[in-house]
Amino acid sequence: MIKHHKHKAERAARTPFKRLFLGALAAAGVLAAACGWLSLHQQSVLDRENELDQQVARLEQELAGWQSSFQRQQQELEQQQAELDQAEKTIDLLSQYSMASPSGEAPEYAALFPDFYAPPFDGEAVTGGKVCCLTFDDGPSPNTDRILEILDRYGVKATFFVVGRTGEADQERMRRIVAAGHAIGMHSWSHDYNKVYASVEDFLSEFDRLYQWIYEITGVYPSVFRFPGGSINSYDRGVYQEIIAEMTRRGFVYYDWNASAQDATRTPRPASDIAQDCLKGVGRDLVVVLAHDSAARTTTADALPAIIEGYQAAGYAFAAITPGVTPVTMGYPGVE
Image (cartoon, rainbow, N blue to C red; front, top):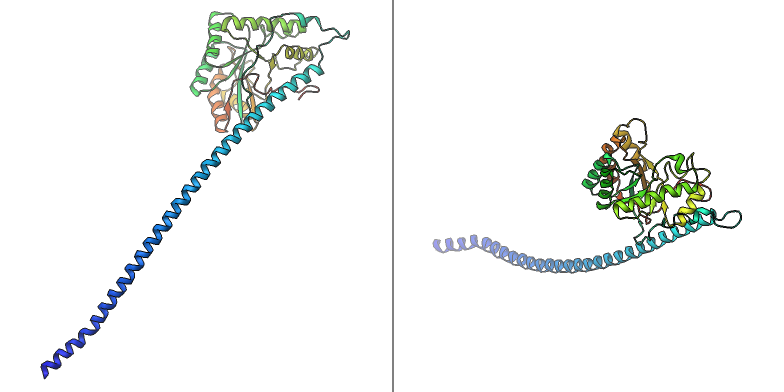
């Protein structure tokens, strides 16, 4: 009897544990089922996310294609507009500063130098973005060598408005300018203001001589030029309108500047000052920087790396000047 009660007590003692075990087992089953459902649900969500990601990627790709097509069309329109603007400006110049004399006949200088006409320009217009055109006047000289080396190091193209230097070393520098892909332009043969601006005929004579010389040395006929002292100066006020009209009629394009190294001084300026002045063009869409590479301008080459790096940091691309670059000119009556 005692033994029977003992077994009964043991069974009673085990019952709560059994129930607890069964409850835990049931809970584990429910948890496993829930985990299984959650796992399937998560996989379904992941699959849906992957599907959405793929759809987004396809849409982004299509959008990129549309944007690229739109940008190409916009660039084409900008190029056409730039060409139209240049043509209109040429027409305005010719109409405002007529070549006709009071008698209605063309001036005699129109018939002079029959081979002095710009070659046809078949390049593209430079449009859109921020562009910096570095230009160097009065060369070539030994400083041209250093400038070419620095430009090559940075992969930058520039423009050299040269004068009539006939030495062998200078001829070789002119060939190096062209071979390196830079633009070469005219800046008069003698750079003697009294000779250059004595008359329209004298101006044409100076530039025709340089035009033929550049071709003889480099095999390239230049199509761009810069007035010594700029298009409006104290020497040319009586003739600059006729010069502009006649040079435009012959197909040439001239360029002044809107940023300057201020390096045409008796003694070389500190390179840091030159760089600071050149970088004053930052903020314009198109910057044409005037600098000099004559023999006395030794610190201009020293300043060149800082000038290039400054414009690069400001987001500018560099371009050599061709007729495809919108002219930067000094203001005169009726012309911007």
